[in-house]
Length: 204
Image (tube, rainbow, N blue to C red; front, side, top):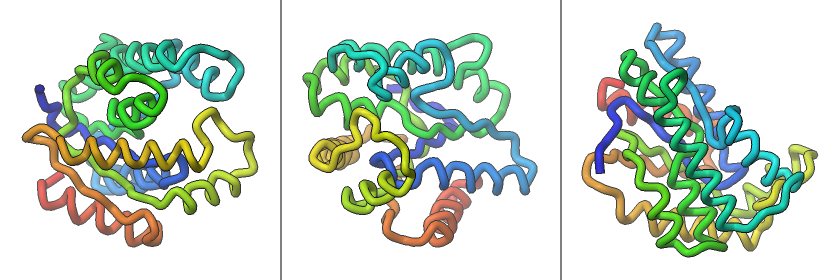
């Protein structure tokens, strides 16, 4: 499995704080005048918008169809000649993504065959994987605090299974993937400092 250099992926349960930390890291690179790009999955591109409609319960489909949609969105996210991650990396940018195929393995494998999910997600690995490990109870509390309608997977029992899948996957990462597991119960500032210190050790 190939490794995409200068590609940083943030993972965690819904409500773990990945979006906040990726935004903070982007500000840090901006301050230091480093070329970077921030992206996320599902994307805001056509296939990603379809995925979001399923998550928002506007479209009902099967777990297998949703897994395939995620994989299709990811393929476009990586390889689209206009805005794909590989193009951004070729331009010399550090690319940070809020979620990647680890999310599919963790989430879709709850209701789909793990073998199927892994088979349709044979994509290159990131050089850096940052997993914010936040307890399910804390995540649910943060989701409730948003005051928004819950999405498809925002249920405590479901997220408990998702976390178990994440931890199993993190034990079997290929050589070349640098993993940082962060305690999601720490403050935003403490988490940010830990992430920056870790990446600075690789001159990134």
